[in-house]
Length: 206
Image (cartoon, rainbow, N blue to C red):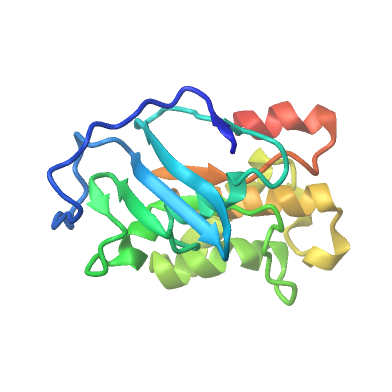
């Protein structure tokens, strides 16, 4: 199982359910309590407990197959936990009555596989969610997208399609796309694994 660095155990709560539906400014950004996840007979996550405060940067370190990606995917319910509780800004996202889409709108995620739309240009990959989910107009979405492309060194590639980019460039587009949604928190699944060494520092700072 992966080692979790700079994470603290979260005290127990009053019960398994949580009726809170609005973000609690005094709650941790993320709190995970006794999280278990199994695939068939294989238990990948075994009673994980931690919390992450607002503004805190936390790294999960472990060998391939130890459950790092599974943990991240559970945090925004892309993977369904077998048991346990996950709270995002005080909202229990394991509660079936929680508006999961509303919570996810505040969580950015960069996937290992990038998950770019292959039939859309780089710029459009960055603007479509802004327009559909955040209801920004095209001009504002374009402005924010271009600013984030510049941060990751791809200002000159906005008209390219993903197939015409290197793996490192696709990864930087995925990072810029997540930043363009201006989330409260970000989940990165090996965000710099496909980058040249000289770009890692620049992308990390952005």
